[in-house]
Image (cartoon, rainbow, N blue to C red; front, side, top):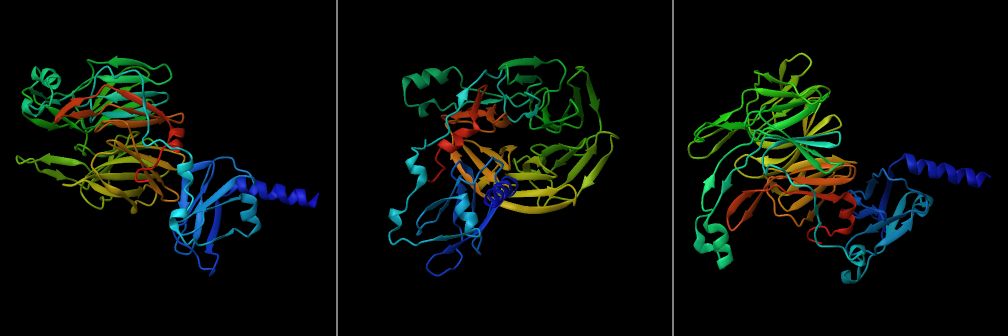
Length: 439
């Protein structure tokens, strides 16, 4: 009975704690840095050991003593042991060096992983747009306005076949315009609803939801001649229950391509660009503001670390801002702690990303950049990259019930730029069956 009690106690502690331990070199008892550590049934949530060989593995899945934990490092034999064995050894793991690195066992190759994420299409956007404001409310995605401009390459001599020439010869022009329609995608029913004749035509703005009220703020609009651009100085507040639209004429944060998140009935806005010179050069801001939607008052926030366009997402009581642009694409991931009002550097992307789209679930931050998706574990700080079968720029992503949705954006072909009305979906489990880029 005593043995059974001890085992039950250990099993309970595994369910309620994060896995920790130290990895040593079996020949000299020195700690090993950068050992890959992961559960065999949860490859996405991996971690690596520190300089002292310490690892902390976070998982929210139900695990048991019989589950397998794996350790791999170039130059060492890959080991897979039951969790019971790790606990019995005092959370210490010893790896043996190998003479030939080519003989190292690579688990991923045995699984015949696909080279890229394979998305499937769902019901199309009624109005193809990019650089719009969007937000998930319940089981519906609300897409506000957006850019529907078209830029067509007139150099038909660049096309290689008669079919290509025939396709583009009648479309050799450029057209610029913004949408004013609110497009609503019902995920569960795979249907669309349109609401028009209410909103201003604008793009490069943000949309957030607070208590079933949609706040559409920032961005820019075009003059009647479409030769001038104006920063939006009002906020549209749309009641999702009653259909009533109100206009707030106070907006101290007039910018495009900025971050906006909602937290406890407050809207936090940061960064963006506030002016474009005649030579095309942008002027960026490091300012941040918060709107208390209860009182209608605005307050200033501590400045960002640098002026830039950026994209943000709320995770707990932190606002993560990812990448951005300040004359060149940026690769920093930073966070702003709402409670302490402090900025902190979190990690670097593999390369600069100008206009990412973000989604978050289970400690994993999903970052869409053109035809790649990055996954960043905010606990272990491990980042991985996956290729997609999409050819999109400036699209947006949302996660609903373990499925990732990609919508909007534009396609580039033969130097041309066409808005996309395609909507794609991908079960999150597909990441486990796909190779990481560069592997």
